[in-house]
Length: 312
Ligand code: GRG
Image (cartoon, rainbow, N blue to C red):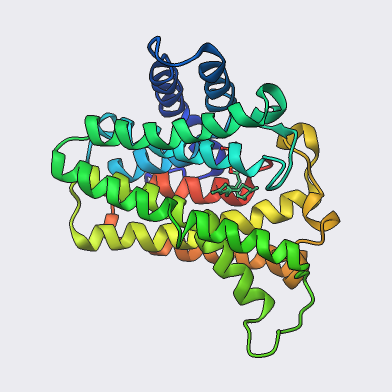
């Protein structure tokens, strides 16, 4: 019987040509004309071309393929989400937010170029994402839907709102207390709400963008959304576990910061073992949700296995 290899290693090997195509396109997109000052261009390229996993672009391309579309049609959308993601990392690292000096194994943008240039590099990437998406996605109706979906995921009720609540929780010192503030949500519900917005919304939007470029029907778009929501939460749980167990060289960023800052985390609320089990269950649910996309689900299943097994 022929079986499809959906292991994490098979996924990573199969994804290499897609990652190469994304990296080459990001390189092209960040060659600006003379209107862009050299320092700003260098700051953008420093962060955008740094060795990230390119998980979000892969989600876009693999979702498009799962809906029967040539993934090359989704390359502008894949690059647009990586631009939004990189903007969010640059701003997240700023002293006013997480204050991190290392990102993707390199000095963070403000550490290398100063705060003002880092803020502007993030702003420029956010704007460029929508330019690329609007100009280069075909047909125009799909481009408009993609712009609306990405703007929603990056906006006040999702990425930015989740970040704002996460920062507010840190300022208040809401720390894995297990207690439920009077009339409020439990730690777990608050944690899930923050991460569904801060991490999950953009990951889910990647899948929707792939489906929209492929002009998929409602049933397939819904399947992609269900997969994305489960994957997004699992991704964050694994991120919290890696912050506990990973080292700075593998992760390319400081580790152990969450617990030393007393941040609300999944292992802090549930314990490491139950967190791992929860991530496994979410990823099983994610794979189950792919049924309407049969028989083209192997790549997205492999990606789910990769998220669980990843070491950085
Ligand atoms: C500043 C509006 C604004 C939002 C920031 C992205 C984010 C919100 C914060 C980053 C902090 C963080 C560690 C979040 C956990 C999940 C996450 C987004 C990790 C980084 O994504 P990866 O692991 O990174 O895909 P690479 O570098 O591989 O792309």
